[in-house]
Image (cartoon, rainbow, N blue to C red):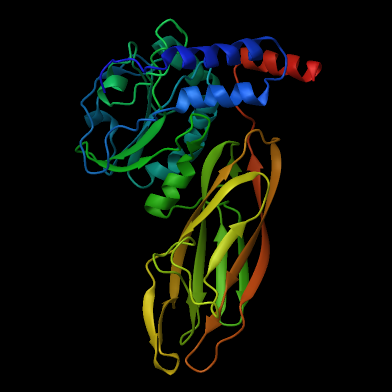
Length: 377
């Protein structure tokens, strides 16, 4: 993308300024002001190289002053490269960076290293890394040269907005050692990030030893449902898994396409689904593997089914803010188990999983403003 500024840059600048003034007043930010700021920041969200494409070459100093390139950053199976807005003032970025440190071993055991890039100075990154014990490289792209090369420069920010000018649209890339993008992760909203533990689960099936798991059993079906890590941050997209095991000769139904949103089954059948119905969850999605198409001559139908053992992986987008501490999420598993001779009625099972919501990593300035807002509320 060129440096041509958006035609509505003045309108976006006004929305961002109104948000900043409201926040800095020490009063709660009106919802409409916050919504306009989110629109102004996220509009035209660009995400850079797609899977299969090569990332641009780069050489940037890390928080310790060493010049780093892809060749020395990548592990045997690649690099998880994270672009964020700022480790200095962006609370969503700061929380993301701490979560990545918590999940770092889950990726490293699969031969993948982590590195993060922002327009922050080396001094800012060094201070943040020291305060929060960040062990992976944080790279300083002063002037946002590499951010521009990746095509993720946020042109919604006017040049006279000195603190924010130069930020990227936040994006995460899983990159092969040769620089090819394997997978791209993003939520098109600067307030939300994909958790590192979610990437470890989705790409490598990795689950922490202390991960929360619940086992459900009914008839010929046993299911283990859990999260890859016991720790989460508000506003992040986290993943969950469901390991199914069916006795021989039995099956459960799926949908065409292998997702809960796939082509629905005929009315007499119930597709396998998992839903977290909780006000603290913005959205819930479940991806199942491709089903087997089973022909049922007696009914003159061919239906998508699952048998044996298989894993489904889902995602939850958590709200912000969430109180730190224990978070119990309630979910429902629905399925219908059948064999060649019997088809049982649809079955639903409720379950609970407990997570630990980590403290949001806000800056000292943001903490003072929040305290002012609470006193004024």
